Length: 318
Image (cartoon, rainbow, N blue to C red; front, side):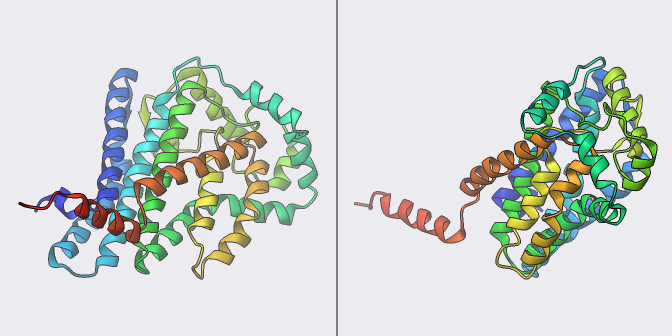
């Protein structure tokens, strides 16, 4: 079976992005002298490969196009997210200085102080728990929207969703490799009672691991325990919130996504993994990449119109 012949053009682009990230992983693992705990990733990779095999089988038989497209998108997200998480650990060189001081100054110019913000919200522990759940819901939201788009036959939006997420991640990682940032939590200490009331995901221990990564580089063996969110600027949490909300337009998911993601901005800030300017950076990144992907993956009517115009432009036989 010819794999490329069974994939749609956006899927081929996505496959090349995954291949590029994997190639960087292999090269940087050799350069940094690190390795990966293969067993820790074997389950995810096996699930993704089974999904691809099923999807290609459906396409070969000409059946269940929606299921096949959904399986391909899900498998690509699994492969890309695992490869990208490994790459995050490898991109930062030992002894790297972060741009967090610059981001702190930018926040101060906007009148935002993370420590004061966190202490103020800690007076409302129930709200803090809701915000923590909201913060951790990003991947679940992504999965729900992806499956919905796929099973309802919204192929163009599904392909755009796939590429916006992958390209935004690539841009974020490229920027972070040049100018790493971790957010305020590793640099600002909160009173223990405040931390207890907030229940942060990005707690003091998490911050210590980030600082160790900046000081010493990638660990000798990268396992699932190292696949934590690392990048502050620009905020991929913001990108994902905008993706799940705006790609859910004209579906029954839209208003639930709006309600959840109205809480995402304070949730992102409360955790301490992002500065306020990171949210603005993530917003700008999303709309820039969305505009690019909309040109790469046009609406099917636009694509048909262009193909018709191209046919009319061909010279007629004598």
